[in-house]
Length: 187
Image 1 (tube, one colour):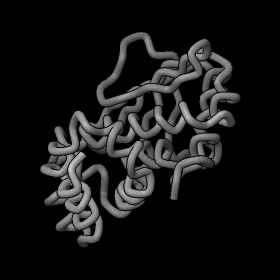
Image 2 (cartoon, rainbow, N blue to C red; image 1 turned 60 degrees about the vertical axis):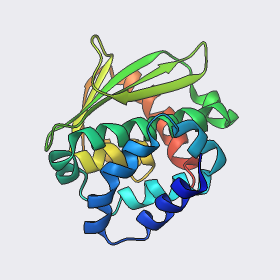
Image 3 (cartoon, rainbow, N blue to C red; image 1 turned 45 degrees about the vertical axis):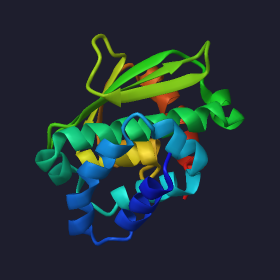
Image 4 (tube, rainbow, N blue to C red; image 1 turned 90 degrees about the vertical axis):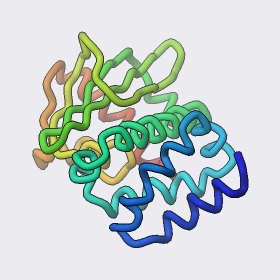
């Protein structure tokens, strides 16, 4: 990964919300295919990217830039997967295979995750998968917050910030895993 791209990421993250939203699509396009390298070499920079996404309206960003929204989601899931690979506390929470879809009710954002108990991995990305065990539906900001650690999965559900369709048992197992991720997302 070039120092020039790292500098661009840092400069973009320092911009105000409007300029960030304007610059983010091109930056995500340039990062595409280099997500693991970016996150592995610059975990603090990845944490800053996550932090700045909390500052923007995800629904309007997805409405205006759906392709960039999907690229952001792929970057985010790459980071989550890498976090899980390096963290025994998260791996300890992976007790069952769970497939879940995330569907925003305020924009075209859709995503999925796959928890694999035997491999102790969590992978995900944009778009939904067929035959998911669970479907989480809610505002895009809430769904993103569940992944980035901004929203506690149990508290969010209890406060009806999102809806869960599927097995309560699998939902509880997923909440346990997501809660551990929330606790370990760099900040």
